[in-house]
Amino acid sequence: MEPITLTTGRLLLRTFTPEDTEAVHQACQDPDIQRWTTVPSPYGWQHAAEFTERMVPDGWRNGTMCTFAVLPREGGPLMASVAVTMRTFSGTWEIGFWTGKEHRGRGVMAESITAVSHWAFARLGATRMEWRAEVGNTASRAVAEKAGFRMEGELRAALLNKDTLRDAWIGGLLPSDLGLPCDVAYLPARS
Picture 1 (cartoon, rainbow, N blue to C red):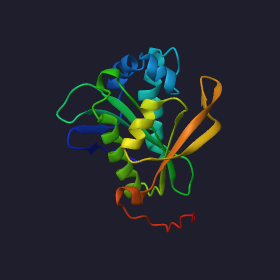
Picture 2: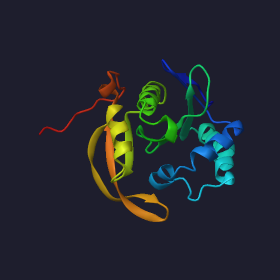
Picture 3: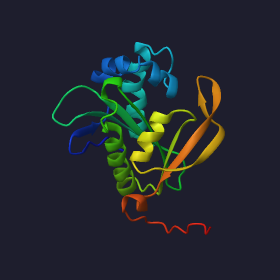
Picture 4: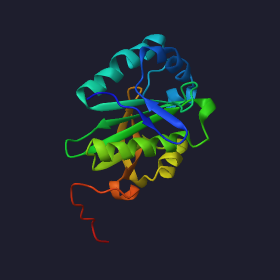
C-alpha cells in the first residue's frame, strides 16, 4: 500500500519521513508519552530513526499499519502521531496516538482520529475500530470519547507496556457511528 495524505479543515496528515526524526525524538522525551504509550523509555535518537525510517515505511508497505504525522495544514511543526494497525482479517483495526505536549487540549487528536477513522472505514474496509489505553489514562480516554468511540469495558492484562502486562480500557467505533455504510451486516445483541 502506498502512503496517502489526509486533510481536515486545519490539519495535514501524511506519512512520517526521515526528516521527522528529530521532531519525533523531541516529542517522545515527554514523560507522559513515555508513561502512557508503548514507546521505549528512555527514548533515544535511534528509536526515533527506527520509527521514521523502518517501522512506518514497513507498515505502509505491507498494509498492516498506517501511520500519520499530524501537522498544521498551512505548515508548521509536528503536532502528533496517529496510526491504525490491523488486528484481524475480518476488518478490525486498532487506533493508537500521541500528541506533543504543547499541542494538547486543542482538539487536534480528536480531529485526526475522526479523519483517519473515516478513511479506514472507506478505504481499508475496516468494519470496526478499537481504541485501547491503560486504565488510568484519562486524557486518552477523553480524546477517544470525543472522537465518537464508545467505551466497552476493561480488559485484564491486555496491554504489554515496558515489559509489564497492564489492565486496559477498550472502546469501539463502528462505521454507523460516523454515519457511514458497512459492507458487512451487523446484528447487535438484544438487551
